[in-house]
Image (cartoon, rainbow, N blue to C red; front, top):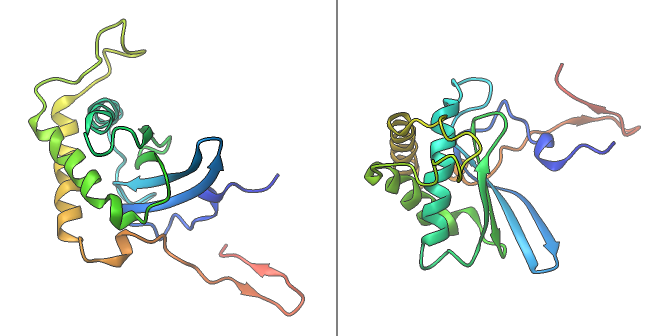
Length: 174
């Protein structure tokens, strides 16, 4: 089987940031999947599961109600590795073009007094939420984004060069 694109990025080099994961042509036009990475994979502790769940509810609600972006948002959800989220938007914008949306979304978490959609009829695991920890993780990422606004590393996946022999054999790190 061919390796999917997100597995081909060297996760040892990813820093927190906003990255284009993939761009697809679909029936509605072009859609872009963004990697909103909050933690360094395999280095930093991951986001607490209950906080991740709360951030999913809070930020999805924010984005789907934002007057400028609500019609562009297709999906906001957690990565299985608990180091960030995927955001799928209509169109194809550079990560810098969605920086303000992402920053405002994470800033909005500090204003929350409750997590939306946490009744048993609205959520498949309604007891697994932690608003206080969601606020803590959101504030940390908000500060990181503001501090690194002009750092190109938070907008481009890291590139690694692989040694390729004249015969076409590719060498990977062991």
